[in-house]
Length: 154
Image (cartoon, rainbow, N blue to C red):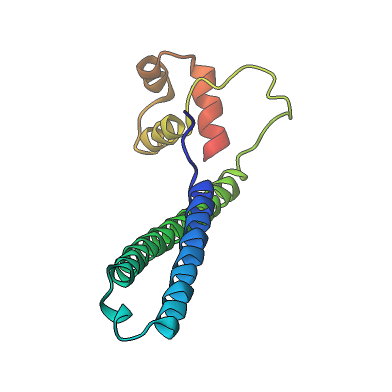
């Protein structure tokens, strides 16, 4: 059985709410008609008491479904706000990462051996006085690659 979405749940609750409103209105109309037509003997009749009990039951159900509908709407509003926040965050990350240089559109060619963090660390160590050959040994790569990374990121 598929899960019921918030939207379909709200629609379902609205339909039930409308049905209970109609039933409530019908019972109110019946009660009003009976009150008009009844005399003093009818005021204490079991039929009238049963109608009044039915009205109370429908009022209770109406209020329950009304509160469920409101809660569903609040949850949906919260989800909409959360989606907007996440979309803004995604856009921010896209903007931050748009500065990254893509050498070609297809992404063809050799993939980089080092990530940005490692490159920054290599440059930092070089600035502290570490030699290119010692960095090459530490990172298990060629002296030329270390030299290239340092020159591109200074």
